[in-house]
Amino acid sequence: MLTVVKIGGNIIDAPDKLSDFLTDFAALEGFKILVHGGGKLATRFAERLGIPVKMHEGRRITDQETLELITMVYGGLVNKQIVAHLQSKKCNALGLIGADLNVITAAKRPVKEGVDYGWVGDIQKVNSLTLVNLIEAGITPVIAPLTHDGAGQLLNTNADTIASAIANALAHHCSTRLMYCFEKKGVLSNPDDEHSVIPKINRALFEQYKASGAISAGMIPKLENALAAVENGVEQVIIAHANALSCLDSPDFVGTKVY
Image 1: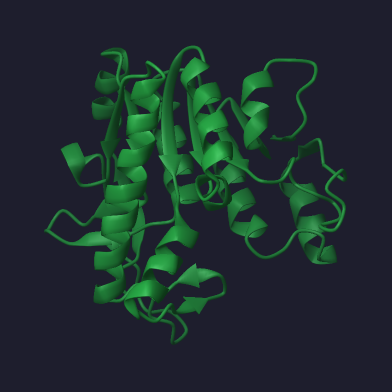
Image 2 (image 1 turned 60 degrees about the vertical axis):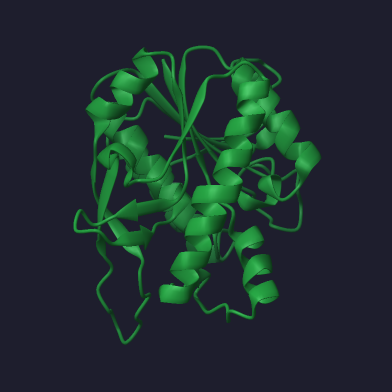
């Protein structure tokens, strides 16, 4: 089985938590791919350099200056630190952005309802055969949230979406599961109660929770990507705390399974 894991910024920002997560990821059996974000670190660097951070509904507006910054932070510092950590744990990792080996191509998001996201990409194609060749050669791809348009332009692309698109593409080649790891125990029915984990959720339940306001903000696009993966043939989709990676197949597992 292939496991595609996405790790979020709150874990990346905490060195001890990241180290524990990468130990568990390195020990994960079977083929694996890691997709990472890194938003908070990019924001801190932007503040340090005096680059304004512009957001719309939780998504980063990416002008040219911001694109240069996140390319350095996501594709450089964060990506290579993760790769170095994995190598220290005997996991032979290779850091990539979408332009490397033409792994992921995207199109610049069009202006919609007066909102111009700048150099933000919507995924068009995942080069699944290249990823299959890498993992079959014993290499673990570590993918930063940057794509390209095939004409020389880099694009900022949501890491949750990249993870879903990769899992969707690879599901046609092998049994695939997708896991979104972050700082919560799963999808919560009450955002103020960390123990209110919804054990299983499908699209109908998602729409109910969204309508009631229990699921909101950044959890909405995460679940949209998770549901899209299930609907495209990904065998198993999980949303859970990063420390749940070590007990994925255990009766002790706590998290949300998307079906």
